[in-house]
Length: 139
Image 1 (cartoon, rainbow, N blue to C red):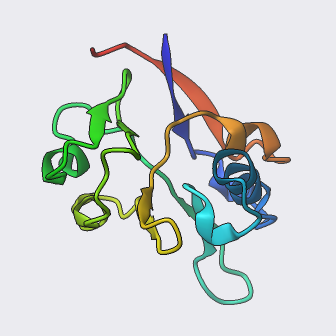
Image 2 (image 1 turned 90 degrees about the horizontal axis):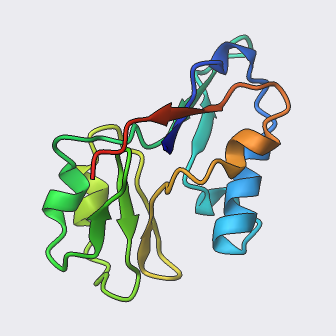
């Protein structure tokens, strides 16, 4: 059964960025927060809470997939997409098409950074702010 990331425990987040660092290290072999597919940021102020931006695993209409002129994005079982980097032309159309702003662009590799719902971020979150949820396969 497919799984997707859920960030429904963000009220417990202390902004340690362990999720972002683990994503960046494991998936992009880099120690930069900029290369993480999940983004954590403060809502502002000294007492502001932390919020997350992560792929919501669209199922019916996947705007990023539909905007891709090179067909580098394929449907992922359970929602979201899988990027085929060999086919991607780096046009950034998927970045602007994402309805939640969860896709960023790596200027170094000239490829989008897209969550593949691997769950590594959930494993490194010390406060269980993130979790994996089983969903129906839709392919």
